[in-house]
Length: 485
Length: 128
Image (cartoon, rainbow over the protein chains, first blue to last red):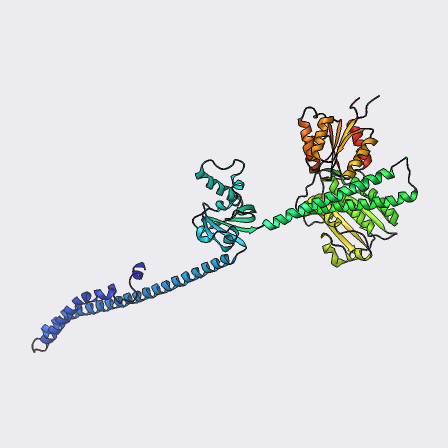
């Protein structure tokens, strides 16, 4: 096959036709002999000789003819094979050309896709970190043209070295320093197949950028590792905005808490001054001031807590907590407000308590939120019922009172009211920050829409779930399921 | 007659400083000085060697945590009791305060009665 392809495809020379005259030589001699016999046969009296001669000649001639036909057939066959090979060679050459064109087009597509990315840096390196691909996004982000980087620089040249040297500092041997830094850069991606995190890039003009870099290994056609890909997004401004938000929230928190500390502190001094007792009216007015100051304080706490949840900086202090005690405490907290509104609150908890693993302060906050909501949204004459019971939850989330195989022990807390309810279409958004149901706004129920967001975040952080069932003008039930035992 | 315990008050917020001063008096103690920044608190503590310091955590000059750590490092002031007040109320804030060497930590806003009780507890037994 390869020998055929090596020959110029336009040539008609081939081994088969060249050998043909040589093979015809014995056949030619036989024909001469036959002609001699025929000449002799035309003479009278020579018939017996002629017949004998004929017998002697005809047999070799027939044999010759047969061989001749065989040789001709072989020649034709070889010629066909030659043509076939030539045409197959042409086809293969065509296919190769098409494949090459496709490869080129595909590479062109890849290059044009990579080149069209100007906001993300796409950097490809070989296995040792030497840059092989440097897209316009990388040129723009790091300030160096492709020609000055590809095959010349290592990716680690553009990283803040202190992030790669680790706790032991730079390797004292300059020869090993670069290799160690590159190993540190791809360590997680090598272990886990990919790695996305923030790194500090150093630009040509000396700026430091916070870049979220996705690192993945790159393989060649045989599945061998050929190098590494680094796709980076400049997060410098985003991270700065996040830091600003954090600073803002903690500043607000501090700046609001400080005056509230003064208001509440001096109020307490006035209210508790035994030497100058207040009149009942004064006591009532100052009580209103205190209640509102406490409300502001809760709001500040809720805002700060929501910001912590958003930033993923919300941590639990787990201990064994008796949920029954928490539910009873929430009822006590809500009792005065409920009585003032003409709403009754009933509590049903297990006599022996119900212990879960969790953060007592946060679980108390979650329970308080549900109970105060229930009281707040229930008109005079209505009822709020707090029910705590142990249960068993299967893999589909169903909870039953009796143990079944494959079920986990849980604590189920439900807070039901006979209040204004939540329209079905709004129930999905209930746990979104600052969302307020239309029934809440229509009935002028005070609030900012953080309580349920916080309650949900606390429940989720405990590995539990929070669900709602509600009918407008009939009531609402929130059910909190927490892992127990 | 038993001498009242001597207390140093430091908070950059004048209203809170006065509130704490009133609480110290309610607890039956004497206010030896009240200052508005951390460096002044440190200087006053070295001069007065008070029985108790009531320190705000976030103050200019030096934070309450820094003042507390500095007092603990000096033999003359290492025995002073320290009560930290702070707007930071998270368990991490409290842990930081106690690991700086504070004897007690009260998040703001604090009930005045609670502060009075803390001051009494921290000064009981001293000067007896």
